[in-house]
Structures are given as C-alpha cells and as structure tokens.
Length: 173
Image 1 (cartoon, rainbow, N blue to C red):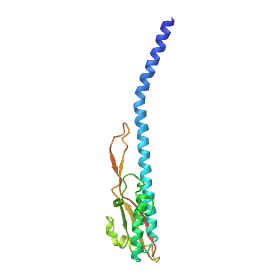
Image 2 (image 1 turned 30 degrees about the horizontal axis):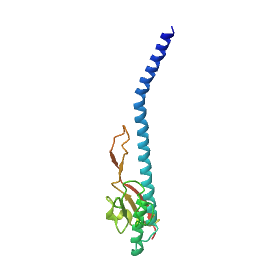
Image 3 (image 1 turned 90 degrees about the horizontal axis):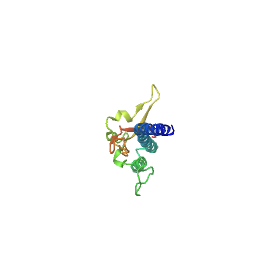
C-alpha cells in the first residue's frame, strides 16, 4: 500500500514537471516580448521628446538674425540627439543609434531639408479668417533604426526603422 502511494505521488510530480516545461516556453516568449516592446516604446518616447525640445529651441529664434540662428540650428540638432546644446564632448545619444544626420530642421529659410514640405507649408501660414499669418518650424528625425536586444524567442538581431518623427511649432518673428 505504501509503495503504490509513493508511485502515485512520484507520477504526479512527473506530470507537473512536464506541464511546467510546456508552459515555460510560452511564458518566456511573452515575458521577453514585453521587455522588447517596453524598450521600443521608451526609445520612441525619448526621440519624440528630444525632437519637441529641439523644435522649441529653434522656434524661439528669429531666422533673420543669421549668425545667432545658425548657432541655434546647431544647438537644436545636438539637443535632439544628445540632450544638451553642445556637441563638442563625446556623449552618448539619448537613444542608441540616434545620430546628428537623422535630424532635419525646416523653416522658411531651409524648407527643402524636409521631404514633402513646400515654402507655403511653413511661411505665412494662415491661421483663420482675418487673424493673420505665422511662420512655422519643423524638426524631424527620419531613418532612426531601433535594434532589438535579441533576447531569446524575440528575433535576435532584428531592427525596426521608425517612421519620421516630427514636431511643428510656431516660430517667433
């Protein structure tokens, strides 16, 4: 009697081990997938916020003041990539793989830098009936490539290229 109880208990342990092994793989896939998706959203949000900060910086400057505006454009690119206005130091980008060439700044003096924009999109834009016009500045990143960590079961080494991320703000005159 005692021998059959032991055998029955041992068999239940074996069944539980097999069930655990069968459930472990899908649970790991879900867990690693959630981690990668979290990283993706974090990097996307970081790029969106940095582009917005760069647009805000450029929008506060007058493009007619050429020397200070050129400096502002350079500072805005650095701000979008590194989070600081000075690129002279060896800094890590806010999002891995983000580089200065990903950032484009378009306004009435450099509208051709952004694909699909014309001068009428950023200069003397109507704000409504009889309310006047304003100038806009567009800061965008394009071609930023997110690299997955390659955690088990999540597509090791694959990448995802974000669609262009842009921020549009009214430019001071």
